Length: 233
Ligand SMILES: Nc1ncnc2c1ncn2[C@@H]1O[C@H](COP(=O)(O)OP(=O)(O)O)[C@@H](O)[C@H]1O
Ligand SMILES: [Mg+2]
Image 1 (spheres, protein in one colour):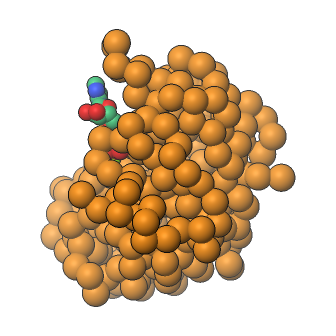
Image 2: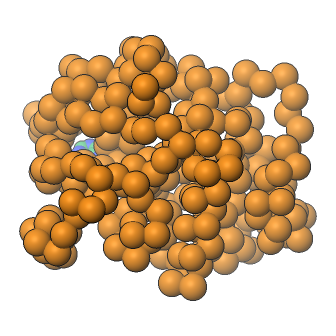
């Protein structure tokens, strides 16, 4: 069974029809890559999955249960985690305090930071007491992922994690995504436009164009023609 099944999802901002019958599956313990040019509706879709935007129609099944009517605060206890576009870490809080904010909507009794978080991101262990705002872009991205992982998610949504970070850190983020899939068995929905990371981590892809799914499939279907048509500006 898919970790998440999105069916016939429609969303509007006022009169503007932003998502049009969007449908696809997110497989367990694998990386599904959502692609498409700026403005096609990728972030809006992520917000609908998190309950931060409300679709007008359609359904979102998480492990077989319909969640589209649940408020946002009920989705983290359902083990769906989200790293928003632009990361949105707290610059004045320490690294450790930033990670703790991940417990905010968690139903978990223990609010202790799991030790594997610092094993995954040793640089954060070294910088626990530093302010979030003092970290580099790549370190802030690792912090945003660490914060999302404290709720022990079954699905992690990453919205353009490589935006504004050095190419040398793309490999580190790819390694983290592969490890989340393979070792922690977390499903990842990766919103991404950069092909090098997509090829390193994705098992399947969904390309959106003007609010609709243009094409989806396994990675062997992704060819230069599709990339030129839907991705390269
Ligand atoms: N809060 C909002 N109110 C109105 N329109 C919005 C809002 N957020 C995004 N949009 C519009 O919705 C469309 C999809 O935006 P978005 O989901 O951010 O696309 P993407 O993430 O693919 O770049 C764009 O035309 C954008 O301008
Ligand atoms: Mg976006």
